Amino acid sequence: MKGTQRIVATSLMMGLIVVCTMFIKIPIPLTTGYVHLGDAMIFLSVFLLGTRYAVIASAFGSTLGDILSGFAMWAPWTFFIKGIMALIAALIYGMILKYTSSSLITKALISMIPSGIFMVIGYFIAEGVMYGSWITPWIGVPWNIGQFAVGIILAIILYKALLKSKLIKP
Image 1 (cartoon, rainbow, N blue to C red):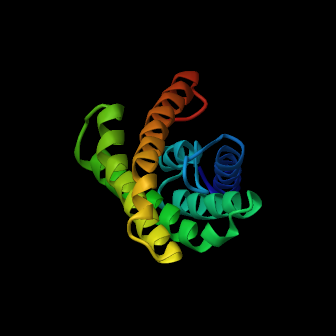
Image 2 (tube, rainbow, N blue to C red):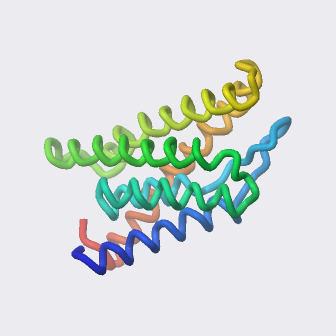
Image 3 (cartoon, one colour):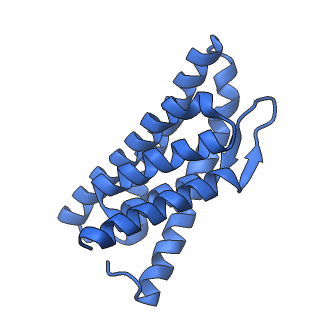
């Protein structure tokens, strides 16, 4: 992709991240948080856009999702956590592409599990700081792990479907 195509694709992924963050939510019991499918679009953006543009789409798309959903207090944390999450996944994925011929699933797992773990730790710290308690954030940990695990699976399924349709090139 070049120039305008890259900008359009980045904007599209940003919009998909916003929509999947805002409209497909499962409330987390005992908290004000929720689980969403935005991570699937973050991981898909890593496959499709490359490092710089995946980070931009992820940071801004996730932040807009928080702001537009009424969770603006999370926006600064989300901007950095989701941006760095995409950065970690994209850097590892790029290295794997360069040095191995493993399957797509193997590459995805190797690159996206560390980024998901970063996200879990990032939100644990954010919640601890925001609420002044290091006990409360433990409630969200299994939910955040589930969120990024489902995100990985959906991203792989969607990416494989796009490859099969020949709408994109590997």
